[in-house]
Amino acid sequence: MNNLDELKELTILFADDDELFRESTKKTLEMLFKKVYTASNGDEALLLYTQEHPNIMMLDIRMGSVSGLQVAQKIRKDNRHLPIFIISSYTETQELLEACRLNLVDYITKPFSFKTLLRALHTSIEMLKAEGSLSKFINSNTYYNATSKMLIQNNQPLSLTKNELTILELLLEYKGHIVTYETFFAHFGSEISHSALQTLVMRLRKKLGENSIHNLSKVGYTIK
Image (cartoon, rainbow, N blue to C red; front, top):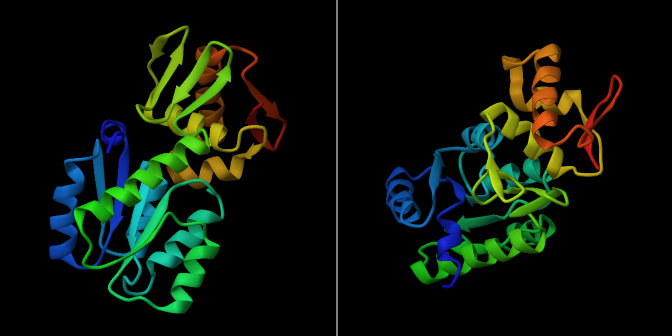
């Protein structure tokens, strides 16, 4: 497959409540991805999604109280483009219908072959490219490469802190729309105050260019 090298710069979150299957599949994924996050249930998967912002998600459909489909439903409320595919030991019509509504990459039945896994990952890469999620331009000489998580300006990389990266990815995800203060605080949790957020945005604006990030008083920020 000609985009295996692209996977080496991406991260994936894999959630499954079967420990043996999760660990064996993790080893396979680690040969392909820059970083593999694993979760044993839906709640843990949602927490890791919020904290780590993986490029692709692979979810077991049945994981106790919060299923893979429920995780996908929650994510789709604020992220329409993240490639998500479901794996399952079952094939049920209702689940397949729900998966279709959520614009998922694939619905794979266990046990699956390495070739089947690669096909789903290939489709995930194509989805990211189609949505422009791998490289996002901020202006004519500045863009963010989501694959390497690098900000490039005049063909030179600019370093970002973890918090600056989180802010930039949120702004680019909703480019052209206001990202509210509430959305920022939901991602950072209790780790950040309003004044600290302002300071982070000011530092990021200096790196991007003074006219890059716009503020709507008492509402939030946007990149147009």
